[in-house]
Each structure stands twice: as C-alpha cells, then as structure tokens.
Length: 115
Image (cartoon, rainbow, N blue to C red):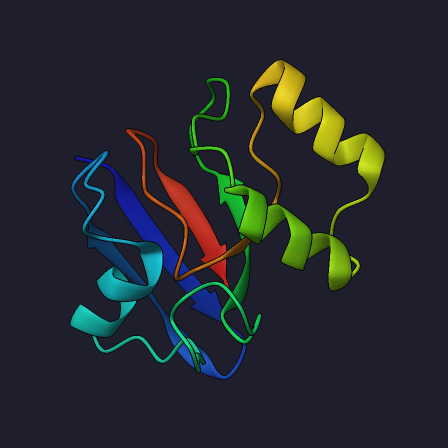
C-alpha cells in the first residue's frame, strides 16, 4: 500500500495509506476522506483549483499514471506544462510534477502531495 504525505504550510503534514491503482480513489477523494483540505470546485478536471505538486518519496522511477488529454491541456493552460514536457510525458511515460488532485490516480509508490 502506498503512502501519501500531504503537505501545506498552513496545515499540519499528514500521511495516509492509499490503494494503488484504484480508479475510484483519486488523490482528491483520498484527501477528502482524510479531512485534508485541498481546495477544489468542479472535481472534473476543468477548473484547476485542485492543482498540486507531486514528488516521489521512493528511490525508484516515478510511477504515477499519465495525465489525461483534458488534464494535460489544463496544466498547459495554467503554465505548468510546455509542449516539450507533454511530448516527453507521452513518449517516456513520465508523470509530470504538477497534477490535478481530482484526476490523479495513485500508483504503487510513496508520494508527497503539496497543495
């Protein structure tokens, strides 16, 4: 079971267990279930209010699932991804550091989520 450590300068850091690969449990759903106040509005990957920075705490290669086309487009619009980074993400299967909590599915890796 992967561990997710949620960090925000205005809140105490909290670490919780997650189920790897569950397409039902996004990072936002896990945060809400654990009373972690990540801001959100639409929960559908269209507004960008749940933008988070994700860093692997494991020493192995990042495993986070790739962002959907909708998420990539919004991250680009928000200035968090360039066309070059999108190309690298798709070719090398490397997840970007910036994600939408409502869209990200946890893989089998321990991660730090900064919001």
